[in-house]
Every structure is written in structure tokens, then in C-alpha cells.
Amino acid sequence: MIINTNKFDVICNTVDNGIILINKNLEVKFWNRWLETRTGINCKDITNQNLKDFFPQIDEKKFIRKIVTALKLNSSTFYTPQISKFLLNIELSKVADKVFDEMQQSITVTPYDIEKELAIVYIYDTTILSEINYKLKEIKEEVEEKNEELKLLFDATMEAIIVFKDDIIIDCNQIAILKTTNNLKKQGIAF
Amino acid sequence: MKPDITLTEDEKDCLQELMNVAYGSATAAITEILHAFAKLSIPKIQIINSSELKTYLSNELNLEVEHLVSLQQINGTLCGENMFVIDKQSAKNIAYKFGLEEDEVNDEEIADVVLEITNILSSSTISKLAEDIDTNVSFSAPTIKTLTSVDQLKNLFISKYQKVITISTELKFEDLDIHGELFIFTTDNSIVYIKEKLNKILDEL
Image (cartoon, rainbow over all chains, first blue to last red; front, top):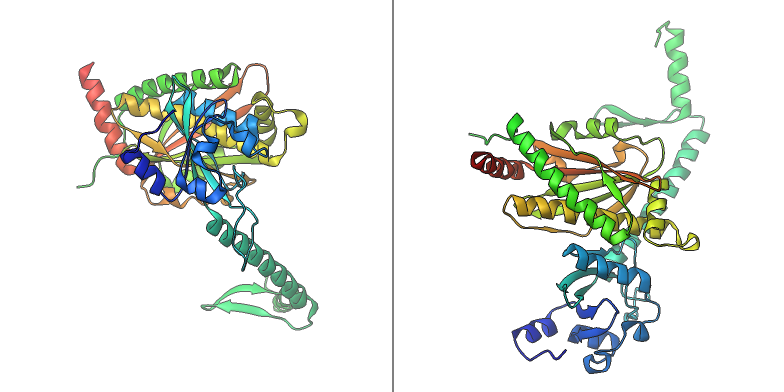
């Protein structure tokens, strides 16, 4: 398929995400400039070639399933970064504060021509978001660990510790429960 | 004056009919994609206060065993959210239906097939309903979480609305024990739009 230089070409080659026009046999029919610069593979070199020959790590069965489903439903199918980290392994050039070696991606597979079994694959770079999530997860685990340590410390002390917020008890240690219970019992208060 | 966001019995019946047709197209899509005969039970339609949604879900779902919950946002005039809930074993069985081999079935693959089936159900049911009531919709990528109690489902999206229409159905496969439930939640503005379109259909009868 020859794509003429027209508005479609200009839009596809200036947009900030990857666009692949592909058939259900994984033959590439269009490869935009974003992908050329990120992968180092030129559109003319990959056109009419099988994507798997360039990216052998692709789960072929799953990818074909997504394309076929999109064509049969006439609606988009997705790879979410929550489950699949990436479709194409694109190495990141980032050096400082690096979390991932490969670009993390969100993928949308949209039907293009049902009769010719062609679909458009949109690739979005979600690395920054994934990095933030990764760091947040790490911090959350750290906070949980510290919280556990603090709880152990609270329960190990012989002093009663009660935490108030806006005049309401929000937390206390075991000794505080024990001492309060004993005091109430001594005063003959049932609870 | 606030718009009326309740459905009359006639409107409810009409929506039920439209949903039956929409679910028919979902069944056909699943059968075609998975090459397996699936059955969707007759959809149950209810309009509830959004504040009661959590209680409603606790009553509807058996969360004694681990479940996977997938949520997919519906965008357009008919907007809201689809929720597909499936127990882990049924999700595993769906993975086999998707052609995965025993050694390929792991937590990530199971989650991926649940997302896929949610997308199939959303696209086929809602697209058909949207077509019938003269509008267009698009779908966001679905998200997934593991659920062991309804409290884990902090759905901020729903809390913004007064009422939600819940349309629930069961997905069953003939030859394999798979049981999942699909809920479609629509929002106040969508209810107003649906009402208007349902009345147009009813007037034409």
C-alpha cells in the first residue's frame, strides 16, 4: 500500500505517538515517523514485512487475537500497561534516574478496513506515568514497613499511648486498651 | 426544576427489550470470537440511588472467593461505566476458551483475557444500544483489580451521580463452568437522554 503525501501523512508523521497500519497476518502497511525515530527502523524497510521479524518477542497469538477481535467487533481492543508493559521493545535512552530499560506502552488496536482485515495500532509512551506509579508503589511499601515497625514499638512499650485527632481517639496501643479496660472494671462500668 | 431521572414501567420494558437485542449481539460476538457457544441471561434492569450501589453490589456478588473486577468507561451521550465481575476459576476457564495452553495460564494472562472479554461485552452491548437510540459511544481502555470485599471498590465516578441504572446479566458457557456478571452503570444525564429516546420509540409503536 502506498500512502500519498497528504494531510493524513502529515498528521500521522507529526503526532506524538506511534501509528502502525497492519493486517491480521502482522504485515506492516504503514509505519509513522515517531516509530522510525524511536526504533531506528525506516518505514520503507518494514513496509510489507512481518512485524514479528523485527520484534521477535511479540506474543503473536495475543496480538493476532486483539486485531481479529477489533475487526470482528468493529471497535477498539487494548493492551493496558497495567498488564502488558509494552508491545514493541523500544530501549530507552534515558541515563539518569532510570527505572525501566524499555519504553512502557499503552496500546489501542482500532479497525481500519474490515474487508481487507487492516487495523491501526496506536502506541502511547506511558513510561513517565509507569515510573511515577513504580516509585509510589515503592514508597507505599516503605511506609507500610515503617508503620509496622512503629506499631511493634508502640506495643512493646509499657506506657499507654493514645493518639488523638480533633479530640477523637484514632489509635492506641495494647497497653492503653488494657489499662483503660482495668480502670473501667475497677469503677464497675460494664462495656 | 430538576429533570426526571426515574423510568416508568413502560420505559423500563422498552429498555429491557433493547437490552435483550443488544445482549443478543454480544452473545453472537463471543460465539464468533471464541468459537464457543455462550449464553447471557435476560438482563435485570434497576434504577437505584448511587449511595445504595455498594449495598446493592454486596448483595449481588458472592465475594467469599477471590474475584476479578474489570471496569471500562463509556464515553459519549450515553456515558457511564461497565463492570464485569468474575471469579478466579471462571476467569481461568475463559483463558482456556481463548486458546491458552495450561502452561501459558498465569495471573497476567488471566487478567488480560478478563479485560478482553469485558471489552467484547462492552463494545457489543453498548454499541448496539447506542445505535438503537441514535447516538455514538467510545470506550476507554478497561482496568482490572482483584476484589475480596466490596469496600475495595472505591468508585468515585459513580458517587458524582444521584441515580444509576444497573443492568446486570450472567454470562454462561455451555461446556465449561464459567460464570461472570456484567453491570452497566449509566449516569444522570444519560438517564435523561435514554428516557427521551425510549419515549420516542414508545410513541412510534
